[in-house]
Length: 351
Image (cartoon, one colour):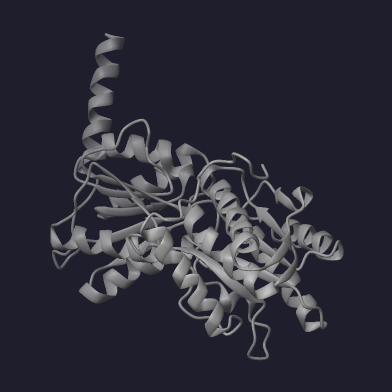
């Protein structure tokens, strides 16, 4: 009898989950949602970039759009947030970050009418028929940022502050090193890369920790720090900003999106030399538009880089001369045509 009651109870729960709520808003249109990762919606990086893409699509098509910040960072927390949005009627949900892998894997089994995208994870356990997994060739955009940084400095020293030591962050590190080395070997620069200045802080949300690491590096004579660390990276940028305002000639390199405004010093200038970008806003927008237009193609893993115009540095930055920007564009073409192949491993590199 207990087994029968348990089976009946599970069946009721399943029906309740799948009933969820209306799949459309009151006007019959698709509703677009997003769940943030461990950061915040105003991180001026990964979360914000993804949400801006979803919201752009919603505004363009006149659709309802919202986001939820989970109560924590466990798979249960993420799955609960996805389920909450589903129960409110959202049938497209964007999930930015590898931390969503298990939650998305479970959600795609629970809700067969939910369109999901996960950014920065390939879902090795399996991609559902209504799920799109999107990863980037971070090493390519970081390579271009490394070239730009080396050309800007001419000579000196660079460092790197990563958040968690995960593949996407590692590829930023490795690509940056290769870009600096390429400039040293081919473009007449003389930039040092001391292994002690290439570190992972261990968090994407420790602003004070990022600032402390940057302080130590700048004190050692580092001229520019590439920060691929979310909110922790903002701490690096803040330290660069303070030092430039005090008259020091130091720089920060942004990540994920164009972080020029994050480095705004209040005098019309920025401490952001350039940013290694991946087009999270663009891919979130494209997938949301496809979902609304009925052209969403699930069951796929998209790997995007310079050749797809989804990775690179900002087209312009007042801190780079037109000559440097032209040189970096030429490098981008060499990556596109395969003349330059940027490795996505640590072979021969710092960590």
